Image 1 (cartoon, rainbow, N blue to C red):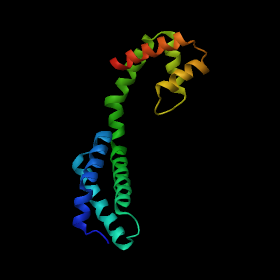
Image 2 (cartoon, one colour):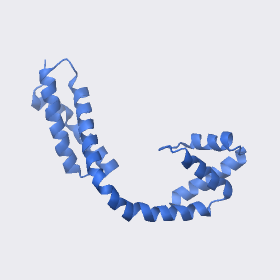
Image 3 (spheres, helix red, strand yellow):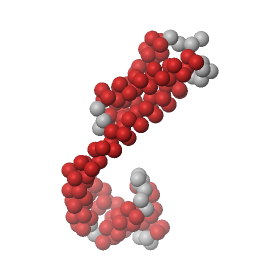
Image 4 (cartoon, rainbow, N blue to C red):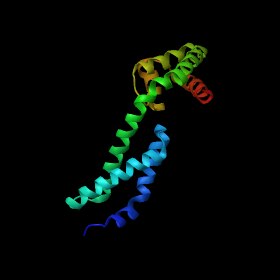
Length: 156
């Protein structure tokens, strides 16, 4: 049995608004614009579902909404990046250099080494194992560096 469009909307409306809110918070794109794109994706997903009801509608809808929001936010953020660099990134980078210079030599070397790995997300475990295994820091030195870096990040 296929869902009517009203039943589908009632059942999945909360998921759609939740995905839009998540994308709004992570990208800064207007919430109302995201809702519009998500509703378009809902209509496309429902059309696909009606013509191929073998797939579960919730899964199909989730994929369609996510892809639509990813594409839209990517397109929106392309045009804003040059302005953001001038207004936000450049002054923060200058501040980052000052903060980096205020660290002890061991901490500064550890931060620079981690930045060279070019990982987008770094866990505390990965960072401490890098210092212990690759940089031959002792446990007390690792602990001291982690404490110092954590304090700097809290104040940043």
